[in-house]
Image (cartoon, rainbow, N blue to C red; front, side):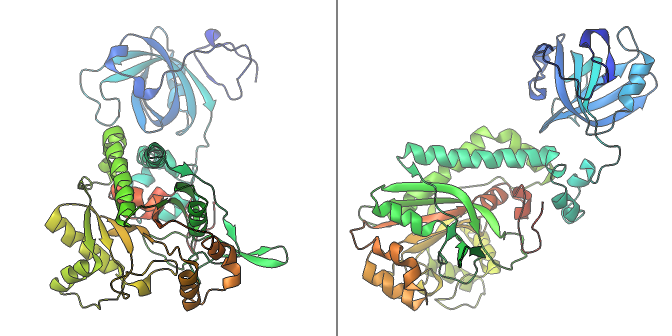
Length: 474
């Protein structure tokens, strides 16, 4: 292709046209196209979302992430018939640069995010031409869940281009930022922990085993042991954001074999409820931040997946496990005092709590010791229970946490009770022999938080590259 100077042409297929002497044209973002810019001649780079030729004119919808705008190419002083034909034949999803005049519209354009303006194109350049036949049409991505899900998951360079997916993952980024900002402002220190470890961090069998030179290692189920060691090292309050691995053969709407964990650990002064209050305050700050800063994203997702606005209380509702069991029994559920909550019972309890307290977020405290990890502190008043808690959003668990055992002897006894090889966690147990403050914490699943906050129905919708028992690519 010959070198082209923009001012000499009105339209061209211009792949690989970038040259050092090209001026910066000050590209305008689609979301910035408002009636205040009416009459201005501007440049925009966007994808061709749709095109429709009609006589001597062609209507385009230009899309840039979660925003789109209608554009018009019409035969006239600056546009020839050939230019209109050229624009109409540009493949969908191609990337174009357009020079256009911003015009106010008399009638609202309901199908676009920029509803009060349209662009009248004077020049158009194809920067990257998409193939005419794509493995996935974006229209397929806005169909009901279940229709074409497998194709969407395989084609991750296309599926997340939809305005809904763009909104989901930008909100997800916001959750991480709010998590970090809130805890940093509280004096927490961000840490990084190993993901290749010598023993199962949760004491269970659901771990991925990997070859590690002449021995075997495991992918970390959580950063739990390392968070606690940092507390023993006098960091006092720590958090980390990173991958978590669970070798659970669970093909459900809410389970992934790899997800992003938002983990917190902190020393407390007098009672482990100080930890609960710190975590719930962090969650409330996240909810407020999403409500105040991400309304555009929330509304965008709501157009495709309508849901009730997420509700929360200040202070956060806290119930004891026995109270939750009592509510379920009153609703006709048969379950024992020390029985763990099943997924259906979690959801039912969530509905009962919403009806009674009008909140989608609550804490269930004092879980049975038998259903918690080995490092969980037993309840000093009733050994059947523990100083542990779960937090729920819309009736589904998003955080599991507890006061940790900080006495080496008791920790050893509990590890042996769970049949854990003491030699493999020796450095962990030894860290409590040198003096350790009382402490606790919890781990949050990022994808699940986003799914439940937005009222979605499958955690794969909030995972950019989901991993489950049947999916290892892309």
